[in-house]
Length: 104
Image 1 (cartoon, rainbow, N blue to C red):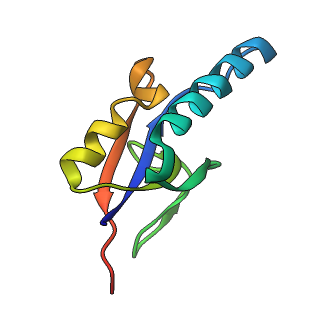
Image 2 (cartoon, rainbow, N blue to C red; image 1 turned 60 degrees about the horizontal axis):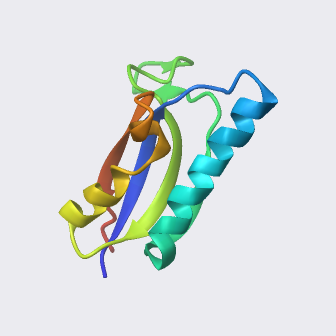
């Protein structure tokens, strides 16, 4: 079955311990719902740097990645349907980029 990377963009750091616990519970529930389709739970990422042939910038570009996961799905449409349940999408604070992983 094909695998897809979910590249998370956006989100925000919870301001309180309670908000953090609520956010973690939402992520756990969504990932539990993905079940066996979730191949690599992934992680949030720190500040990204953008490297080009002429420079390195520390701003992460226009839409820096904030985390990733890998899922398996029958096709890209099915993977996109899974991504709709992501807490970043559900709460309107971010988006998920869905791309197939290509075997070499």
